[in-house]
Amino acid sequence: MKQFLKTNMTRAAMFIAAAAIALTACTKEEIVDGDKTEGKADVPEFVSYTPESAEVGTETEAMIMGKNFGTDASKVTVSLGDTEMTVTEVGRSVIKFTVPSTMQEGSYPLTVTVEYTDADGAAQVAEHTFEVNFEVKARVPEITGYKPEAGIYPGGELTIEGKDLGSDPSLVTVTLGDKTLEIKSVAPGAIVVTVPEDVQYGPYALKVDVKYGVDGSQTATRTFPDFQVLEKEYVVTSEVWAGAGSQGADNGGRLAAKFFAPQSLAFDDKTGSLYVGEIYNGVRMINSAGNVSYYKAPQDNNPWWDGGRITCLVSVEGDRLAYVVRNARDRAWKYLWLAGRSSGEFPDAVGYQDYNSDLEYEDVAINPVDGYTVVAASQWYWWRTESRFFLVSPDGGTVKEPDFSIADGNSDKSVWNSHYSRVVFSPDGKWLYVARASNDINTGAGDGSKPVAYIERYPYDPATHTLGNADSREIIAGDPCGGASVGSETGLTDGAVGTSRLAGPKQMCFDSTGETLYFVECINHTLRKITDLDGTPTVTTVAGNGTKGSAEVTNAPEEDMKHITFDTPKGLALGDDNTFYISQDGDTKVIRKISITLKAAE
Image 1 (cartoon, rainbow, N blue to C red):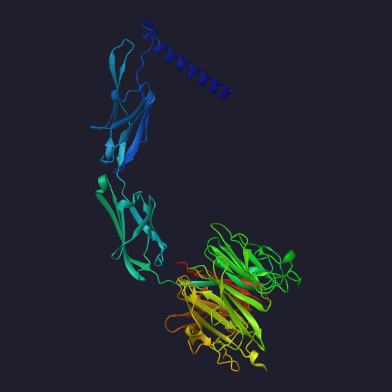
Image 2: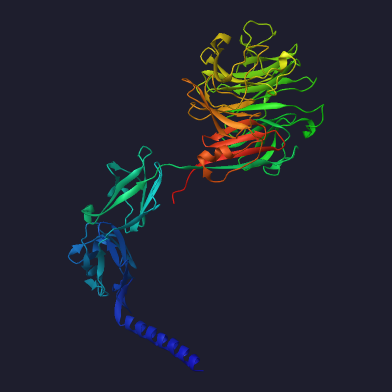
């Protein structure tokens, strides 16, 4: 009952107050349509203002709330102390004004005047000074620290922490030793800068200057005398990236999918898709979302059926895709298939050049400069196989066979052979690299059983679309095979050209600089690289130790890549200079991924 009485008494009091205001408002006359009627004058009333403060050096929009202000800005003045503000807008219940950035720090009376006409038609001025002064506060930046606290790698971003740091990059200067750092962003609590790539690791003085106040006339400074630029450290992680392990042709999510016999890989850096060429199972695509599907499928998606299966090897270069059909039994077929695009994923490829059943088409490479493709093939000649090569124009219509291509097995230009030849062009388009490898390293009864394991290159002129001849070849790795009855000396030996030994070199690819050639070996079970290609080509084993296996590493030092083991790797692609995709065609049919990342600063 008490609460009820209290509530109703409050409502009654509000009603009485409102009635009193109404009676007071009717004590004067106002003119309506030329006649005097009782009413009240539109006397300006001042209620409040917002915001209650501004920051030195910052222009601030403010407003006064009330009523009966009119709409004529020329009849309104607003002052902070003795300084008149600029009135920007007047409405019946609001006055907007600007506090200039030049106002000095202080507490100022806020005074407003409004000219108006009273009920008798006389000009009047209403003036009001608010009881609470308007504050102009000095922003004093406080620089408290930086992250990461351990320091930063060259090329990394550093965050400087603090309070009231402002938002204008032009008022901030950060130096590291004698270098002025690039300002990425400025916010009241953080300044983000970039440390240049060319900074040497070691201790530096990190100095931060933040200007503030009127016209930036004052500066807050802090120096951190022992800031550390860290030496870059990398860690390696390897994993099964796609494939359930057992042989099959199931599509779907990359880890649930099954591969039949993955031989070649091609990474599309425009879409992030990885193309997989397989024995008997065509070409499949793993898109950037990790879904596996057919790009070129065997008939009825069935790699087990002899009448419909196809073996393909694939290459992607920019906006061009090519794949070859190694064998298609006795069916009428084309051996080279090409596709181009302007955007998105590649459309279906179109077949060019009639299939020759006497050949097995082993690999394809696209020249990145002129768009020509080289197709490698093998052909039986008596007890051995010879390698043949075909240079095909971008439209698929013209074919030339270089003189190092062995058509009859008796040529005096014969570069003693391999059962398989894998090919790749250098990024500048000026060299064709050929990896030659026999099926195994054992010497059999016939000359055709002699082992072969080496990598060579031939000059190529993109302007004239011409490959060098057999006399222009350069051996860059392995033993170049002494002749039909000698073969190559094989092994797992790193070193300069002439001393390095290989076993089963398969797919090759370049890093982005074109200075390092990577390749995998199916017999040595390794990932290796060749550097100093134009000087003294030198082979170094990157991962694998010559033994079949499936060992992985996680966030391990870069030198621990040697502990990664593979099971018959045949395909290789680089997603970037620090991401390797490797297809295995051994006891497990999977695609491995090796990622090299910068170690997080602790």
